[in-house]
Image (cartoon, rainbow, N blue to C red; front, side):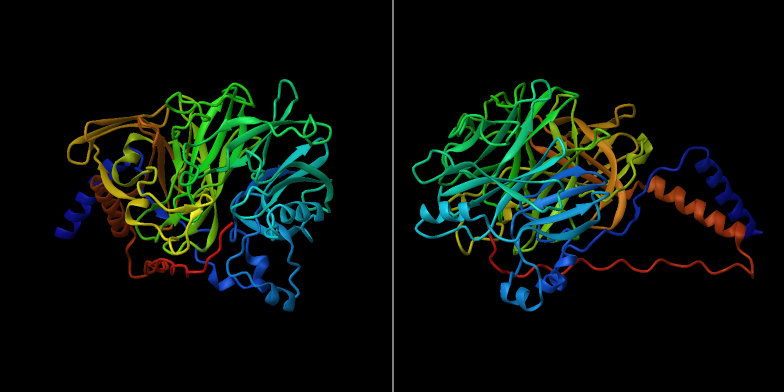
Length: 542
């Protein structure tokens, strides 16, 4: 009798719960790959480097595939071992994907570094440098694939941006000559090219540069891909105050046709540790570009917003070097950011990060707190959002480093405690409370949260579905900017107590209704793998 009464109570609870749609709870979802790739880092395993050994990526759609080109950076590179195993080691890594999640490593674009580039660099750097190719950039011109690339000597302005062309992103490539070259007498440094085409005029512009003198923009001849005026090196578009300690490099220029704005993404600080992405915008592809506070990027103040920086969620050692980005707009009008990231604490393993990117109501870009894993888009309700969240406030570096040529000195390749943005927990209660003293509200139509914490209002946190890589679950994510232009990230990690109770009651009722001597025993899922082993220390810098 008591059993029947219990079943009746549980059934009543279940019927109450089922009268409204079940609230979303994070659910198991395997990651596409492991972050620690030492087991496949040997040269003979190069075909398994899909998302691995990625540095300074550039990405474009061509046919049915997205093609990615990146710098010659390999963890534990061993050319002797490569030759022994018949690895066709070359220059400029090439990958492709059909879904932006699963990447196929194709090999290398060039069999050798162009002789003209090697000669220029070594003649102007005392015979040093020109050992690899950095920061390629691919763009389409009619039926031709244009590949820009740079060759340099570390710590010098002896640099060369070249151009090669092919009928396919997979080559073969024909060298077309020099775009810009610099030496120690130059104001600028010829590295890190990014090219944009004005859709209204058809004019081509190349942005390039580094901490030496800042970032520059030069007009190109659409017909040749080379400078419109021979010898022209362009004009200044971005700089920082003190280049001995304030690194600036890696421009990425895009056009947003919906907002009719050009966006210039730049990278601050040392690439192995506190590398972080900032952005400015303009009505013109050649600038001037202004930031979140209205300051011009070519002024000497530091610019905002900050979109990415070193971070760590629970159950993971975290990431450093989260910058030098590429940005892609798909045919469906979705935006994605691609950048390298180094697995902490030793920051030697270089892994591709692909993030969804959005533009808020003020026209500023924001990026996902988690990597893209192909989770389908969906709409959420207010009930879905109640529960425990893990949040990160993305802040700029707060520790002064000693730098050489814009990069860290030997022995400083690990993050200090204050350089890594760590997560914290916040409960969004069903009654609208956020933590002990804050509160939140949800705009269902816009799929945004307004959050108040410690008397600070954050008015537009964009909600979307995504992968929780640290816990291997499909969940709800949010991203936005605070009033100072710093990113605010979050992911739902547990359901609300009310939701969990109703779901438990529903499962128990279903179990009572279906239980019989012949019923099969419920199967339990196998346990998730433990957090991945941390990376080993081995110096590898651009």
